[in-house]
Length: 412
Image (spheres, rainbow, N blue to C red):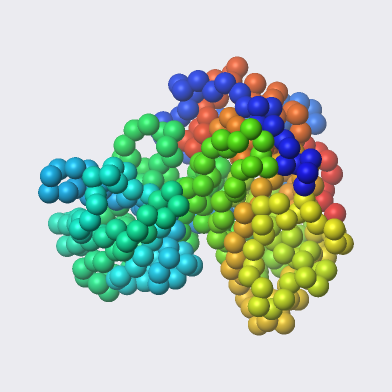
């Protein structure tokens, strides 16, 4: 860990002009450009041609989380605008999927814009289209945000339905425009299913149903896990070295069938997006803990950000780790894993699950850029330099890249 924690963030930045940040998506998802990096260097392509880049027998692992309309706009009687950004639930459950499915009332940890104008009292939204009335009261300040209590009528509706009716799409802070009605669909993967994210797993935004069918016809199969992306994914690294940065916790949900699918799979394993990659690597480390006899039945399923870097136990192969995890699930009569991860992937990390990666272009000096640098090494500079020189569009609504470092398949 010592070497990894001393990584200087100055070495992982680049100049990103504002005009290169895509503020809107293209009219067709798979019309985005695709930068292809591999042993033969760098090539340019289109995302719609992804099937040509993947071998038959490849397993794509995708994050099927669904973005909730987590931004709420309230107005005081004075006209002061108060914006609430729901980050994660506190009551009735800290489990985001359970909390979103709950009826009134609930408590969430939120960011509050213009909080100095809201000292006390209830704020309300009334949506005449569907007769929802949503109220919010401030409980207390906490850390960098606030605990807020929400109540609504009709009370039997779930909080997810209330947000869908009253909220707005939580676009990233670098998209400097108000959310539009079209963002409700555009900022959502076509295979999104499980509600809980406040940011999209943006590598998946490029897929269309037609492209997924084409991939399946070629023998490239899809598997799904869920990691609910938090706003911490946009948190800048403000410290000079990465060791001082506190990585955010995110909840994941993985069905037993996904683990079985990976174990039975002999071809390349390719995560779609950094969230899928972090989830897969976190699953490996849970399996390694079981393999080493270090996961008790009452332990929380959690991988700390620096856990792999200080690991001194046995390092099983990918399938050994996952079989150990499957056996542990069988012993505890589990068909689904629910846990959290703060795993940070930086240069010196040894990848145990991922052979290639489909991802977007990430912010300078971010933990996501460190992940890319960990995966392809110093070549990240050439990849990003090529993208900048050739007018690629950057960040959430931007273009994508397929990174295939050709280091050989991971130990099965």
